[in-house]
Structures are given as structure tokens and as C-alpha cells.
Image (cartoon, rainbow, N blue to C red):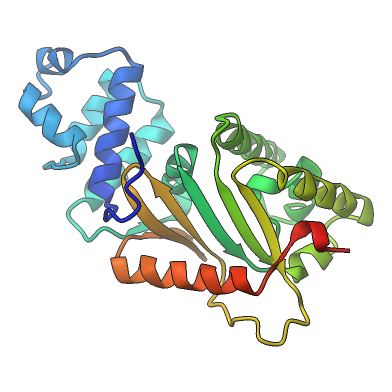
Length: 268
């Protein structure tokens, strides 16, 4: 499906599209849903088109029919509970990055402005491990699981072959010593290598650029076949914002940051 960059994204559209994908992945038909007494074909069509109405109990039952893992079911149930609210999605710690990563997997375009950290899709395993070295994980197993998730996230995005990523970062991210000088050297090599891929742009804003724009913080514009939204992180999780005024403002800020930036190949 072609991307609809100007379509207003909503949690209902996202939930409907994911339920449709899960049904097909489970090789279930709409008739199978009806036979399981989980709704008529018309109701299934409306749900998968993002028109609802959504009830969390119904979404949970559909996930059971489709044999969806517990963690993903929990995310979809929370999404169902949010469909009665405005399009914005406030993500809590238990589901941290859950919806964003779901969208990132099938994004037609990702544009991100970051400050003093290399973007997650570009981090080497060593950089990520050093960056998280002092994070208070509940156990060593949780730390390993987080590293594995990072690698899975990168594979899901890059293995598609049509990935489109534009990153603008502060030069501070390149100069910040994470782990060791050897780890940073390998990280810079990876950035320059990835920048040669089709559809990838990696740029930095020099620290001495006098007229560089003042940015409100890190943010990401993500476009899927369901439209464009803006993602920001907060202390307890993340937030997906879909209001057209917010998306327009984020685009303008990303353009300003790009104009003030230089290609990663120029960095010494």
C-alpha cells in the first residue's frame, strides 16, 4: 500500500491494521472469526479498517484466536482502551516503545532529530552495551534481553531493503565518549557505512554553528501507510502525536535542523 503522508494517523487505524496483519499471519479468514463467535464479517471489516467500535475484551479474544504472544496482546489491549480518546498515544513503561516499534517495522520513512546520542537504528552492539552499562536493569537477564531486542529492532528495519531513514544529530553525539575511543571509532565507521545506503541520510549540526536552530529536544517523524505522526520520549515511556499542527511543526523543525547540518562524511 502506498504511504499517505498527509493522512491523519490514529490509534484506531493502527490497531485495525495490526489486527488484520495478525489474522492473515495466523491464516485465519473473516469466516473463521465469525465461526468463533467473535463478530460478523461486517464487524471484522470495520475493525480492520480502524472504524471500530473497539472493546478491549474483543481485541483480547481475537489475539487468543490468532495465537498472539502475551506481551503483544497486552499492547493491543491497551491500544483498544485508548481508541475512545484523541489520536495521541501516551505510552507507559510496561509497554515502552511498543507501539513505536510496531510502526517502525513498516515505516516508509523515518526522520529523526537527536541530540547527544546516536540513534538506536544506527548503534553498534558495543555502543549500545556501553550506553546502557549503568542502567538499573532488574537482572543481568533483562540487560541481555534488551540488547537482543535492539538487534531484532535493527534487523526488522534494515532487512526490508527499502528502508528510508534521515537522521540529524548534534555534533555532541559524535564527540561524546561512550565506552571507549575504540567503541566510538567503530561507531563512526558504521555511521559512514550506513550513510552510503540508498534512502539513508546521516547529518550532524556542528557545535560552533552560530545560527543553528534551538530544538525542543529529540523527536521522530514516522510515516507509514496510515499517515504521519510524531514520536517523543518522556520519563515514563513515549508519546505518539498525530495532531496535524504538531506534525507540521515537527516537519518544520526537522527542515531547519537539516539546513544547519553537514553530511557525516565531512566530520573529522
